Image (cartoon, rainbow, N blue to C red; front, side, top):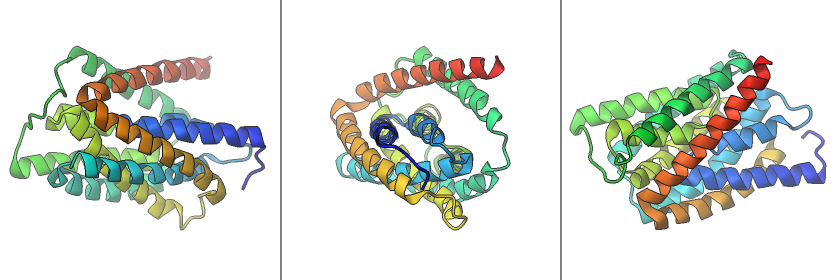
Amino acid sequence: MPEIDLLALALLVLAGLTAGWVDAVVGGGGLIQLPALLLVPGITPVQALATNKVGSIMGTSVSAATFYRRVGPDLRTAAPMALAALVAAVGGAAAASRIPAEAFTPIILLACVAVAAWTLARPKVGRTTDLRWEGNRHVGAALGLGVAIGAYDGVLGPGTGSFLVIALVGVLGYAFLPASAIAKIVNFATNAGALIFFVPHGAVIWGLGLAVGTANLLGAYLGARMAVSGGSAFVRVVFIVVVSLLVVRLGWQTVQDLG
């Protein structure tokens, strides 16, 4: 485990707690947790990605269980989507070390801008569930979304939960609260898929991952309960705020990189 002083560890734990809360409500916690891990002296990008998955899977396990008990997500969507995402995440993790780090930020920034603009332009979307397809067409769409977002999560990960929520709302037609519930199950699977690749390759820093993960777990529990209590309207507001803040932060980082 890299040498980390007490203050740095406390800040990492705080980042994990905040990331867990954000992830449980709307997703996107990795854009808080992963940059914090990348600041650890001596850590490589692949180690940070792998260690981030340990923290994230601890949080998503708790939020998925909480949503399952209190919301009852549609397993006809969640199960095939999660399986496809898990397999795709293994492949994405294998490709992670081959993608230039400088390519990540602009890609995520463009995606976040598109998501924020789409959500703001459609204020009524996500208030109620109105599925666009039934039967095999619905399952096929869920599988396709699982493959695309699972591969992205394996490669990088931050923002996966938010992309899952907006895909479930915008493409499949779920309201924000049930979409968030399904997203947690799928996000758990994508984290597991990435770890299937990272763990045998020794990329995980376990002490650090478990410390951050414990904080992430607590944040996820609190966030899931607040999301269930607030309903789809609360989740939508938090979603817009989080994605907007991510656009600002990533935009600033892109400007600095170009400078």
